Every structure is written in C-alpha cells, then in structure tokens.
Image 1: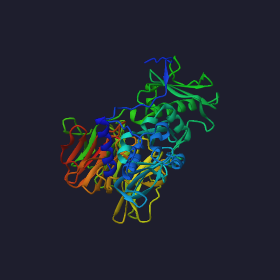
Image 2: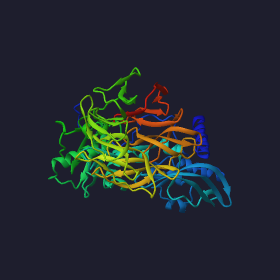
Image 3: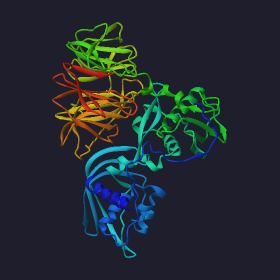
Image 4: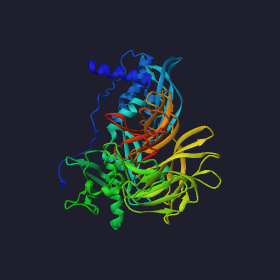
Length: 565
C-alpha cells in the first residue's frame, strides 16, 4: 500500500510539473507484450469519497494511463452523462504546468506537445494549452461534467506507458519495408491491433511513397490474430484471392511479419482463411514464415559498415578502433568530403574546389561525375544512390541526387519563398527527407516524403520538439538518421546548444548533452534500435557518443565526418 501511495503521489507531481523449426500447434493467446519491465506500475483508483476538485482532476488525468475496459476507471471521475459521451479514441499530449481551481471547475494550463489521431499517428505541436474542467455535484460528490475531447496525456504517461510501434508498408521504390510510426497504450498492443492498423493503411504523408500489401477488400477473420507459446502468430483473414501472385504473397508476408516485430517474441507467421492455411513463399515445412528468413526486406538488417569516415588535410580515411586515422586506398588526395554507402561498397568524394565529384567502389577506382553545380557538399548515400547539396548558377542552394543515368539533377522540393536548404538527411529506406530550412534568420527542421522517382518530394511537415526539461528546441543546424525512425540533430533549448535525439514525428526527445565548441557537423550510424552518433567542431575535434560513456573525444584535425549510409 505504501508503494501504491508513493506511485500515485509521484504521478501527481509529474502531472503538475510536466514531468528454428517452429511448431504450429500449442496454446494460443492474445496478450500485450512489454519489451522490458517497467520500473513502476500505474494503478489508478476510482475517486475517493469526499475528493476535492483538484484531486478529482489529477486522479482523472492519472487514470488515463489505464485503458482497461475502455478506460473504466477514468470514466468514474465523470458524471453519468459525460462518461457515456466521452470518446477516448484520440489524445493530446500535454506538458501541464499549472492546475488551479476556477469558478465552477478546475483549470489546467501548460503546453501542447502533440496530437494523436485514432490510428495512433502523432502530429507534433508546441503551443499554449488550457482546459477548464467543469465540475458538478452528483450524488453529493464532485464529478467532471465537461470531459475533454479524447485523452489528455502527460508527457510522462505517453513516453512511459505507450508503445511506440513502427508499422511497415512496402516501398514503391524497391522491395523493402518502410516504417510508419504509431503510438498505442502498451496494454492494447496485441497482434490483432497490429493487423487492424495495417488494414487501415499508411499515414497520409506516405501514400505516394509506399503501398499496402493487404488488398483493400481484406478484413480480419473471426479468429483474429493470436500468438502461441513459440512466438508464431496466426492471422485469420477474409477476402484473400487464392490466385494472388507469388510476389504479392511475399510482400504480404514481409509487411505483416515485420510489423509484428513490435511484439518482440514474434518468431514466425501463419496466415489462414476460413481455417485453411494461405501459402506464403519461403515458409518452412511446417508452413511457418520465419522472421529469420525475411531479413532482406529490412534495409538496416543488411550488411553494414560500422566505420566512421573523415577527411584529414585533404585525405579521406577511416577512424580505426584505436582512434587512428587510416587513409583510404587508393588515395583521393585533395578531397573535402567523403561518403560511403551503408554496405561499405560505394564511395563518393567531393574535391577541395567543391566543383568536382567522383564516384566508385570503396578500395577501387573512382570516376568523375559531371556536376553543373558549385559548392558541392554534404554527400550521403541512401539505398545506394548519392545525394548532396550544391549551388546553381543563380547561387541558390539546391538538393541534388544522381538519377538512373548517373547525372546530377536537382530534387524537386517545395519551400517557402526565399527559404534555403542548409542541411539534410535521407532516411535509410529513402522514404523521407529531413530538411534544415532557413527563412531569413530562422531555421526549422521539417520532413518531406520522397517519391519513387527519387527526384521529387511530396509535402512538408515541420517538427515541433520540446526538450526533456520542457523548453522548445530551435535553431537546428545539422541532422542525421540514427535509426529507421529516429533523428540525431543539433539545436538550442533554454539550456543552450546540445545534441538531441527524437523520433521522426517529434516525439521521445532525448538530450545527449551539451556540445563543445562551435559544432559544424553531425553524423549517425543508422541501426535498428539506434546507432552511434559523432560530431565535429570547427576546430576539427571529433567526439563520439556511446550510451555507457557518453561523449568521448576520439580524434583531431578532421575537416569532415560521416558514417556509412
């Protein structure tokens, strides 16, 4: 009981302060799964007898962490009418700073950090938030008569008690899967939830970039989706065409099994229709499509180079485990920038005049590539294609890539009039671009979708991010992808300049610590679950971040850095 009281009091403070062959038989179950045990458990209780107005509202906010029986505990804080009308399908994530009694109710003030739609998609935000809970007496007790539209989630509850789930859809530009981040109460994360979410389709921003391997007429069957004790998920579907091609079946299996990896003990997949198995190419003798056989669909599970590359006195090289600079051979002296592909096969160099570009195999010969642009810089690979920045004859900076004929072409982007791209990062699946855009003296970080052509983009949505201490992050100057859904970037908060991590929808912001000196560059090693981050300052000092040791200075006299991408 003391532990429970401590938990409740702690949450009140947080709310107020912002805080192998696989058998196919065996028991099946529909259970949520937590990848790691929580430090504490939330145990909301109904309103106590004689509860005060402020305690009533605080209890209601805490009870929103428990979705059991359609938020049954939370509804007990509402009047009978309000409880019957309240629809907790959407949510607002808020950083509450003040809870005060107002005439006829209780006012909660703070900042809105984002809005969740009914599919669990987050739109980031940062603006003042106020809500007044109208209170009435019902059977002699205070109850909330004006419930908010949807949930009001504290940042603490959202980050700690929600699962942050990458669903996967098929790339229109290849045969790999593309993540689409969703957020769902941990207690509701089941195989059935995952399949339902896939049937609903991708986020609107990605509709021209990805496709859904589920035909539009397919629905969940009566047996839903269940996982057995060996980690095999059986998904019952209706509406599947038995004449579906082999390629379509492969895509269906890959999209579904990778999406189910949000439940970590998943090892395999079986699809049934009307109690009959629906064959998936690549399944084992028992009819199970094993996750281990689907790695080729996941870009970041392919072979990857762990090396950090850089330039020292015009010579490209790699930084060894002993923090020594090892020149690349054959040497490409007179280089200003170097980029290496994720698989460690391709390499690109920008020369010191920043007008010459060379491309070839790492460790082999490179050939010049004609580029009718100047001030070439920031080269990086994505799915084997090279991207970089360069200035046109009009002096305007443009985002560039190599088309299928290996011609350097400008990428079509939609920017505000007079705005300039100062930095960029292409996602590992080449589905999204993170752009640092400057308009006047203001820099913002935004995302855009990359269309299948690889030379056009679609839309733009800004990222509004708030530091763990509650201040807005502004003046982002450099960005890199640290995982398939996470960004590493340099920005400013009320605490000063720092390196941050955040998901690509602006959620789950982490502060990796202040930067030393005038940091000019950031690069990250994109890996499933997140990889290393390195920064370089104007003096040529390079630091590398590791979770255990934080920032370590590893080498000096370096003028450019990059991980394989």
